[in-house]
Length: 228
Image (cartoon, rainbow, N blue to C red; front, side):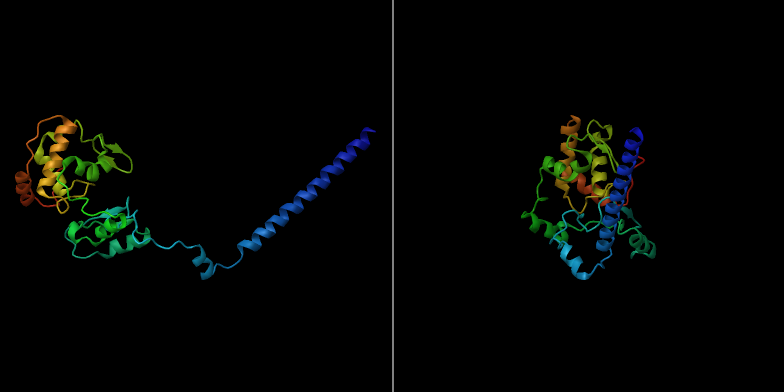
């Protein structure tokens, strides 16, 4: 009796194994048939998403966020090294060119039309300028952060006690920070400096547009204040 039960169990297991093997083979054949169909232009066009009128995820000058920027102030044109690196990295090596003034920036004008706004940078309010142009990296409380790069804190920072230092960094840029001399007026830079000193560092500020104008003419965008 026991031997017959064992034999029956073995037979059932064998039948189940055959059924499972047949099912797996049928699924593999179906998948191979489906994926072996050639990809035609019709199938591509059917699944493609049309480009929006403005790429809201691109930077203002159509470069890639998080890209590696090559900068050679002596270069008159983009050299072969830049061209080859750009092609081999899918556009993640990009040329570091200064942003044009807002009134001459075609890409910025397209952004304004896309979002239905105009003159969003045309304010002298230091707080508004800080939260629109600075807080993206240095954060809204000025605490700075570490992510894709290092963004130094502006709050409770002894360097912020020097208005001239802030002027120079905003005008000329510093390391990974772009310069804003073509985007912000003397008054705007003075007012955002005043905001950083008074609101983020708790010190009395004497920042003024006259001093910004004087420093604007005395320094160039290639000035590196990293050792100061």
